[in-house]
Length: 187
Ligand code: GDP
Ligand code: MG
Image 1: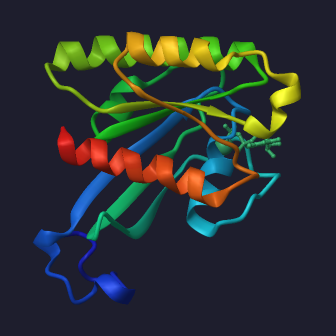
Image 2 (image 1 turned 120 degrees about the vertical axis):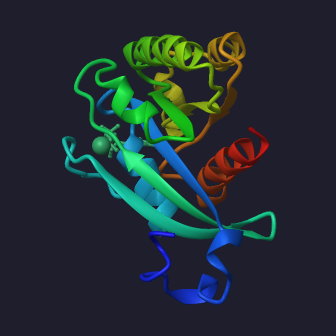
């Protein structure tokens, strides 16, 4: 595999073909906390200021359900709405679609992403797991999107659904990324 040479750490003794590679794209409107969630997952830290236009792919080795995986995560930076979906569809095995529970508009943008993903995957005759994620759960006081609205939209598109906060519990954020891996393995 393309990672064989550079792989360091505890997975280095495991033959490449045994390690599942999962490509995950994080989508959602600007400001929903995509980068903060990714940084939290990778470093266990909340970074409050992150270049909003930065788009990059990060690699993380992890153990999920006692099995090693290589998670490649694309942090995207669409400006206002879905754009260039082909680019993500050509690469990703699964999608995390993120909104902020204190911002109704970010939820509407997720609707556009889900609709767009749904149409593209239908055209390709391929299923790709999608997880709908409400972020900024610490902003409960300013909530504009109810949990039941999230659940309803997720079930309409056949997605798993979670609410988390990039600045609270690490385990909840890690759980979401591990669920993505489990969904990819099932698909
Ligand atoms: P992105 O454009 O989707 O990548 O969003 P960022 O990760 O850059 O986050 C946008 C803003 O929301 C930043 O000011 C972050 O500090 C803030 N933010 C991100 N996640 C959370 C969260 O869970 N809770 C709160 N209160 N703020 C967050
Ligand atoms: Mg960002």
